[in-house]
Every structure is written in structure tokens, then in C-alpha cells.
Image (cartoon, rainbow, N blue to C red):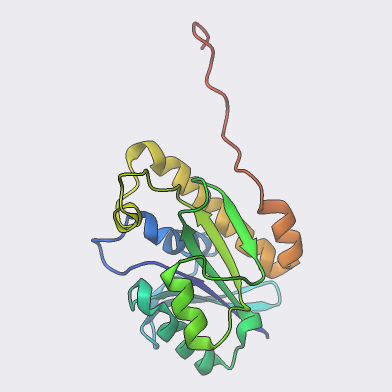
Length: 202
């Protein structure tokens, strides 16, 4: 049975649990929740969950190496399983995209994301699929590190949770239907939700 490795990027520990930089963790945890797969400490300095999706065997992973060392865990997992870059899908946050926007690509540059940069350096190629989840750009006076390591405020948390849910759906589609089909379906602006009622209306 073919093995696909889906890696959510983030930082381990309660301190970072609810930060914008951990949206990749949220997405793979949502996928695991939907299928009843349980994350457990694994080898290669990663928390892992395994299960089947149709004819595919899927390994979900959350590197515990902190964002900048993500590549060490990913390379180890790939070597241990005999997988190559065509079997890899990485899920991460992206400050260049509006909150809630998804962008799935078959390959590409790291775009300044240190987790993606670490993975590309460790496995020797940028030719791996990646799903970016928008977290919104920092305001002019806000340093980038402060933006990504800050928790989602209450006003954004619901939208971030919806993004993680859509990301889980996108991952399922990418694995079961192929990248092209998933890109066509999910690489668009997120549904803003039902409109606010007009004044005086229930």
C-alpha cells in the first residue's frame, strides 16, 4: 500500500499551541480527528498518526524540532519509510496570504518560510507539495516574528478554525483525487460566511 507523508508545521509545547505559526499543526490534527487517528510520540523527533485513506496509507507528522529544524524530522521520516519527495505534502502558515486563504502547490520556493526552507535543505529539493494557510500580513509597526508567534485573537480564531477544517478537506482531496483537482477546488478565496443581518432584522 503506498505511503503518503503529510507534515504539519509548527512549534511544540503549550506556549505555542494557539499561535498563528502553528496553523499547520491544527490542520493535520483536524484531519486525524475526522478519521479517528491518534497522534503519538514517534521516532525522528516527530509526533505521528497513521491510518488508511482509500487505498493509501497515510502518515501524519508534527515535527517536534521547532520550526527552523523541521527538515531534520522530515528527512528522517522519509528515509525510514523509503518515501521520496513525490510522497510528501507539507502544511504551513503563510503571512503573504489573507487569513483563511488556502494555496496548494506541487512545488515552489520557500517564500521566506523557515520551516519550508529547512525541509528543502534537508531533503535536497523544493519539488514537494505544500499547502499554505493564510494568516494575514503583519501591520507596518508589527515585527514578523511577533506576528507569527502571537495567538490568534478572538476576532480571528473562528476563521482560523474554519481554515484548518478546509485544509483537512483539501488534504483529503489532494491524496484521493490528486493535486490538480484539489488545487482547482481549494485555491480560491474562502467563503466569508453568511452575511450579517440588516439593522432591524433578526
